[in-house]
Image (cartoon, rainbow, N blue to C red):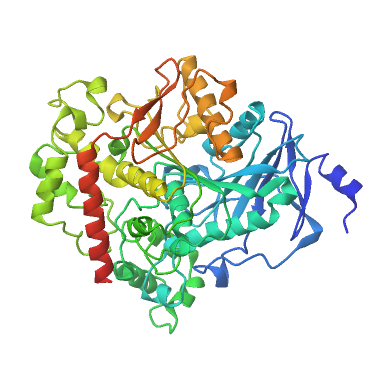
Length: 565
């Protein structure tokens, strides 16, 4: 057994914890007065025989050789602009724990962050996801939490799909990476001073979609892994229309042929030992990109809309919200006429240019329903995004097209906003608290034409306004913006601590109380640095005709896809 005095000396008086697999040494941050445990393994490395395989629990210990968790592990291999700034590796299944000092005798609630990036990019080591700021602020308001961030495989490394993959039960392995990390945290967080019964899973974009998938995993089975959930700009209803495995088969076959595995009896096993560079280049090509989750009848048992309608989800309190102008991040451009708009909306859940390329054609919604949908999204100012208050009434000089703002309203709803409302309604119908929000603050680094787009809220929630990466644009603006960051970060920490976003409010009496969502009088809170109180409550009834048409359409598409499998 390691000598404690030696441990303390070797770690330079840093933190030491003992988990089931052995002894871990972290490092103490004097700046934040926190202990940081970075790059802690939660699974066997997914390499060699474990490539393209469901993650496997750790089967070794480091009891006699200390594990130094003092720097972030390499990020999982991804394909985005941020990847050039990150060390990447197939061996990437690690997590990070940030705990405040001085709370060793009190088990603390846990905020478990799942990063976004469209399931193709991102990582826990991106500076914008630094958990130290929100943990520090949680201590300041008397609601101390421990922050945890987890990695998961991306793109084809995490979502390879085909008949062969399904036949061996190796579907949606990235979501299973997340699930195994949750099990590890449940079993070991007590060693770090965390309360295993008070874990909140939390994410943005694909990270929030991941939270949604965890809430509905295995047809909504409750494995007691978390007690609350936060979803920023995605929901249990997936932001794409799911492709079935057959749609991915041509890409899988191409990969098999490129790697020389075509003659193998077990092509998936052959891929596990194929040349990394060949696979990586394929996933980084147009032909081999855009792998996404599939309905596999196992982890993703059914379409999210169906499960929510049946109450088949883990009934824990949630925060679920969206930004005012989500659609400016997803709408196609060149939308000049009603015909352009009609052509685009038949893409359903995929923006032109972003479809996988594996499917033959997008599902048809039918001419009669298309007419209803067009009527539900008229070319009228109250539907435009960004709104009239920001850009005025004229659209003639919009470089994105005369009807772009009509299109942006639709695409924001179809991807995120209508799903947010539907999720809050499902939770309320299930007698489970839901807190809905709209984020309405545009940072100075964001184009006026973009309004308040996707991901704009991240630095405010994290209380991390230093602008250290593309995820956190510099916030060189009035003090009210920094005060909004403190307010939102405090509210998030309060929810993680108590499952009540208002429980810290006695320290901030000037802000509006966040109402629980109800079906009779649906309300949400608006975060806005340009009002004196920084937030206010509004009725969640805008674009009701469009949302209603969307819900009907989504149900129609889900059922038609399900029957075609």
